[in-house]
Image (cartoon, rainbow, N blue to C red; front, side):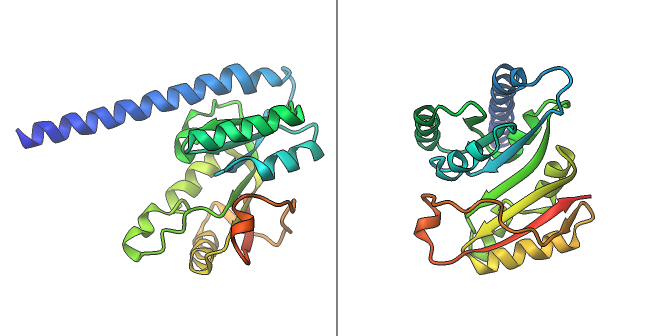
Length: 206
């Protein structure tokens, strides 16, 4: 009986995940793909963990010809980010609730990522929780599969052990090459203001 219940729960989790991916895919198809003309190079700039949208709503107006997407796990943050977007009348930016790997899975084959920005993700500091960190080989592979050749990954954290972890994984990756690019845009953000210092690195897809 216990095994049957466990199997039912696993099936339920898989079904819920598939439903979330389907909803994200529908949003992308109806809101983002419609922004491209037939001959456009279909690529987006992605911020994972966009919070309240401070940073992205500051950056997007400087790049009118590019599209930006911010994702976060909390609906309240997305609602606040959307309000900023509306107040600033920004047409080249979208915010939606989505988990990073599910968003990547939902992307259609004809839509790619130019730049990915990750700022102050949960460092999961305890060793037993390191498996929950976003930066893992599996994530880097999934991101690479949806990125253009030469696409950039920008990572910033106030947690030095997580920074060292990320640099090590990137240095060992056959899909990403550590770079020396500067952080592309400095602007205050909700999370940035909480931390005294940050460490950042960049990498390019190969």
